[in-house]
Image (cartoon, rainbow, N blue to C red; front, side, top):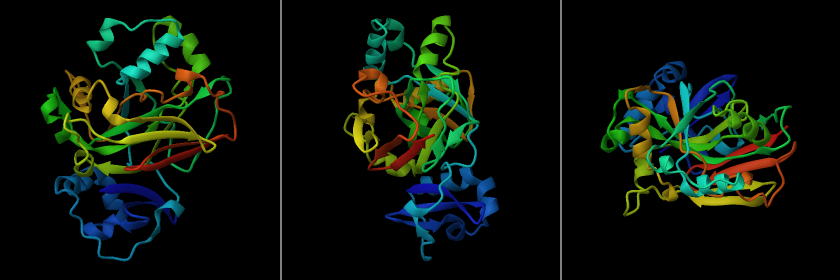
Length: 299
């Protein structure tokens, strides 16, 4: 099932997206919009646990692509951004003249990002004044539905609400300088993260598992209509289950936390530099057949 949040008459509204249309979730579950916003993770978790068997017998409220979108969850409590695709890590390190290190194969490392500068699909994203090397990153965001600590990999999906697309915008020149200190990234990353357009609940996500247990999910990035990157979530080295296990090791993860996978192989300009750095006016679209388009214009 696909869940989204839109702005209608100045208020947030949670909707189910089926085909081109959006339907009110609050009508379907019998609660008002404000109450649904407050109990979002519980309500949507119940829908996901019942394999999305939500009856939408009312008329659609409109065409989703024409709506003013919000990020698909009401509150992001924290963001852990992992480094889980081997191809991306190899390519990025090679650009810095570095070989792979054995520790990467031992620990699925992550950094904490900023929850204050989040941008939904359809919004403009400002380029920070301090960069001349603006880049996108093509990622998947995993939304946590239930609190947990020391969660074993085999129980990880018990704590997952669903997934969406994420763009970990990057100021490469600033990132390159601050990482020399051995801490970070910080200002190279914390100015913007885009999330959306819809949250695909885990019942639908898990129906796309392949024979190896990985999720088959296409991913693509275009800039001004030109394909810059493409990949698949099934190429991930550190599986989603291991990311949840590591994030929760001796630490609590909470409903509303977001776990990002890191960039799929070739999923940024840095890896190839066959394309120029991004500039104001560029339209960057991350897309997936399962999730839709995370569409932003740089200003």
